[in-house]
Each structure stands twice: as structure tokens, then as C-alpha cells.
Image (cartoon, rainbow, N blue to C red):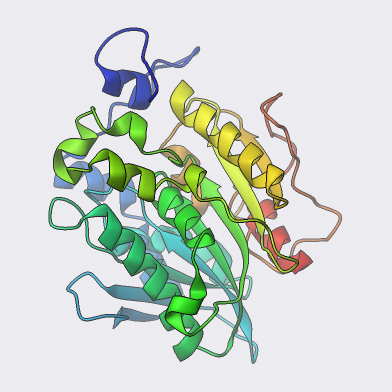
Length: 319
């Protein structure tokens, strides 16, 4: 596991100070009002998109999807599947609609995934639920012509686990064409002895079984494009894991880019998805000119060269 140079282990992993400003001290204990203030843009998704809310993909209370359809859908359309973060123990799909407006306006559906969270939910269950949600989409919504995963923090971990799925167990193979993994955790062992694991109660075996770094499958010809994004002001551990996971994907033959985002921290790196001009927002739309490409920085320098919507949207335009 990773050793930390000073302070309790969780500081090294989650709240290490950044060079120019301290890493924000938000936690699973944040007040409901603070979370509402921070994630109220979710309401914009409902107001500005045609939606299906609480669509069950299983029998559990949290096994539901919120689907935001394109404002002017074509016969078929791509879908961005968003998996929320929250230390695997807070937040929900209901806080995820903020990502919808700039994408649905460009012909892209947005699907927010609900899953069990700790302490009721266990890591094995969360991973299985997210995989099952993708199988459900593939079976029930044939108009979706390509699925693009997007996850933040714990959600990026779950999205990365989707990439390692053996779909023969599900009798369906979702058409996953891309993945945008934002400030994710790809090796769970370093958090075993932090407060984050108090609610998760993971053993070493569970952590290893659910660590994407340990389960990178060899790329097949149809393997999707992967964008691993990390914030300039993320903690050193998040930045290290993002670099090492992108290197592991590349070594296995995947098409992967590492995106180092300037001027943002672990939280506003994803919250800005509600802004049309934000760079990550545009990883999702067909409307972006093909000459706008994702810059691979490999840990050297910061990506500041184009608007954030241009990277999700451009990934779709290349498919």
C-alpha cells in the first residue's frame, strides 16, 4: 500500500495541500444545505431536458436511472452515462442532472446512474449494479448508438471497473465507445486504513478484487477511447493514481489520453460540467469540429488550450 509522509493517512490521500491553495475540505458529513447549494444545478437538467426519472434497472431502491433525452433527438443518438462520486457513501443520481444541459442541447442523451452507497451498499454490489445498469440500457434503449461513460472520483472508479467487465455474464455487450474518468481512484488498497473505509468496511481481498489497476484487460480492436482527467489541485495521490492507471491502459493497448486540467480542484473539476464552455463538457457532443483534439499531457504541463465542452463532444464526433 501507499505510505504517507505526515499526518493521518487520509490527509495524504484526500486532503493534501496543493501548491497554490488548499485542497477543499468537503466530506461525506457535508450538510444537506451545503450539498444542495453545491449541486443545485441538477435542477437545470430537469428544467431544460425531456426526462424519464427513476427508471428501474433492478429491484433495489437505488437501482434506478434518470434519463435526459436530447432536446432535438435524431433517430439514434449517443448517450453519456454519468456515475456520481461521493466516497462511495454519499450523493446520488439526483445530484447528477447538472451535467445534462450542455450535452442534450448538442444531441447527446445523459443517463445518471443510481447505486447503493455505504454503509448499506458494499463495494462488490456497487460494481455489479453499475455493470447491470449498462446492460439494461443496451437491452431497453436500442436508439442509443453509442455509450460514453463519465465518472467522477468514486464514480470514475466504478466506470473504470465497467471497462474490465466480462459481458458474457450479462448476455449483452453494451456499445461502449468512450470513457471519461475524472479524478478517480484506481487502486483501493491505500484507503483501507482511512476513515473512508469506516463505512465501506472493505477487506484487502475486496479492495484488490475491485481495483481497476489490477484488472486492466487487453484492448481488443473495438476497445473504446479512454480519457483519464485529473485536476491541477487534486491531491498528490489522486494525481499519481491517474498517471499510473493511464500508463497501465496504454501498456495493455488501449487508446488513452491523460488530461491535466489547470486551475481546478477535485470538486469543481466536475461541477463545471454544467457550463457550456467548460472543457470536459465537450467530450460529449457531435457538434465539435474534428480538428479539435484531446491533448495528451502525460503529467507534463496543464491542458488549457480549448473549451471544456470540446473534449466529451469531440470524443463522440470521432466515433
